Image (tube, rainbow over all chains, first blue to last red; front, top):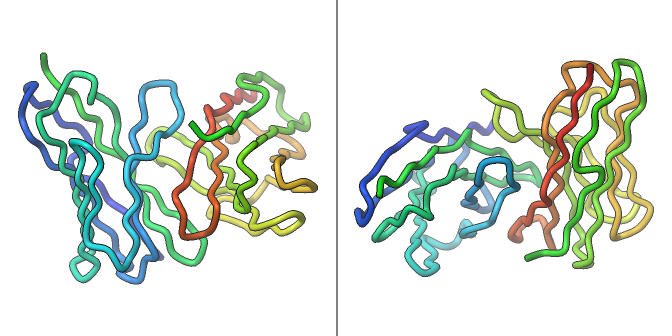
Length: 110
Length: 112
């Protein structure tokens, strides 16, 4: 059974720093991996989707990588801003079943 | 933003009553999903649909049923609500099973 783990559960970082969020998964045969952000009391906003044939995707200050052989994905945020404060979730997709990690709660300190 | 709405946005009901949540999309996406989000468990897939009248179970389907009679609408029904079904319910859509998922704003359900 696919398991998706995100460590740490919470992270505080001074504004302006670059940071990396981690996501690990047990089933390397995933079809794709997606990163989301969730603000308190809100729905999920899609950030990046990486297909199994890709190694990374970039959008603005965000870069997501995927290493299927090691069962890991990372989300790199450059030059962090207070507006980046949110919970970040990753989700692995296999056989039409999507398994979410429990998220990393990120707080950017002004 | 993807055109996804959920109704109602908030609902309080009593144990044993039936409840139906509605997800409506204007994107003509083939796939639609229902998730629940709970502290300590994260997001879990309840049911999903891959076309009109085509549905399948997810990780936590017991106590829930779904129906999709039109491309744009996906209904989640709790036949007899229990307190363990108190949660925030999210609907999501995608063009295919490999495509990006887009989420609705959520429905907060409280079962007393």
